[in-house]
Image (cartoon, rainbow, N blue to C red; front, top):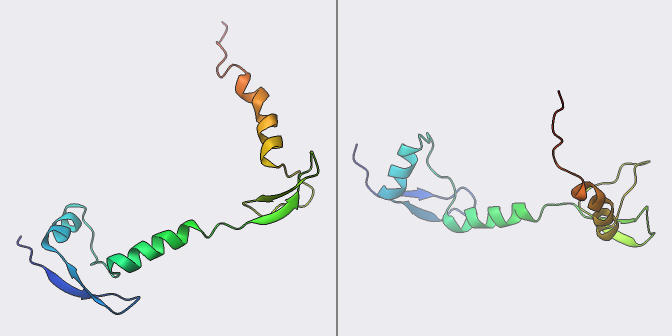
Length: 104
C-alpha cells in the first residue's frame, strides 16, 4: 500500500494540516480506522486541558483541624485528612511486612 501526504481540516480550529505519509503508515500499522480530526496545536491544547480538570475542594482536616484542599468532593460522614495527617496515618501500614509466609 502506498501512502502520500494528505491535507486535512481540523474540526476544532478549521485550519488545514498535513497528514504525512509516515503518520499514515503508523495509523495503518496500529490498525486505526479513522483519520486524525485535530491539528497538532489543538491536540496538544486538548491534552493540556484534560490534565487540569481535577476538582479542588476546600475543607478542614478531620485530624488536626487545618484548612486544606483535596482533589475530590468529600462524602459527608467520612473523615478528610490533610496531606501530612494522611502521610502520618500511612506510615504504620508501610512499615508492616508486605507479605506473610504461609504456614502449613
